[in-house]
Image (tube, rainbow, N blue to C red):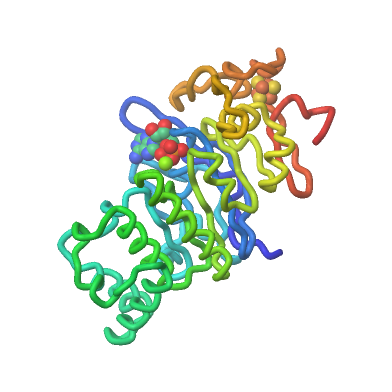
Length: 319
Ligand SMILES: Nc1ncnc2c1ncn2[C@@H]1O[C@H](COP(=O)(O)OP(=O)(O)O)[C@@H](O)[C@H]1O
Ligand code: SF4
Ligand SMILES: [Mg+2]
């Protein structure tokens, strides 16, 4: 498989008048062509910042201090000619923030094609109707004439996915695309992502705080905790043989409907503040397998051909 996106030793520093902190802090991973990669971790672990860095859309108070991002063979870490919009696009949690409330949906979607591909208005409209229909927006011609407020939450997210897919990107980043939706609509949008995955060549980076959602679609899962990656694994292996104690905790927190457990397991404690991360392993205050060394020293990074784990437990034993 050919690598499409390579994130290598990436660290991002946030700075204001009072403090400085790094999230993510030295992370590396690859997305291969046609692959769907899940990025999971509790809120605040650095998932969205990582996505924004890949898109070249970091806020002004953040900068890449080390590492590089290579996309489609080109180093885009600090490029002025960023491929977003043409070869790479993103779907956000709240489509209302990304849509212009004063412009008809059709006009907004057509503009993407007119601007990026210099299409005529007629050509663009034809392609927009085709894409919307494919994504389950019926009577697309009529829906194009409506404003975002006239769409339901689920339809707005469909329109955002249509906008992201119009350019047939090589990479689609979906950041918590269903978190703002109710459960039935969430299931429909997940079905849409599965359909996109099987019918297009687009690679997907699917971000969520919910491991069970990620598992529905991802070929491979990256588990993030407090700015660091603790495990990367093919999805099936992650569930049958989770290596990192944090991953193990996440998996045992997923309710098993068949077992009808009265009490759900949860990981004690909460994600540390990036301003003052714990010494050694950042997960050590919550880890029930903690060793003495975990408190003092950053864990080693252990790579095999298809898995990665950052934990002292595997230093000698291996993976
Ligand atoms: N614009 C910003 N200014 C300051 N801190 C930020 C900004 N964006 C994100 N952060 C901080 O970076 C950390 C990671 O945030 P984020 O990537 O949004 O987490 P996640 O998406 O995993 O929930 C958080 O502690 C957050 O407070
Ligand atoms: S390095 Fe130590 S504290 Fe961290 S996850 Fe592994 S065993 Fe737990
Ligand atoms: Mg986020």
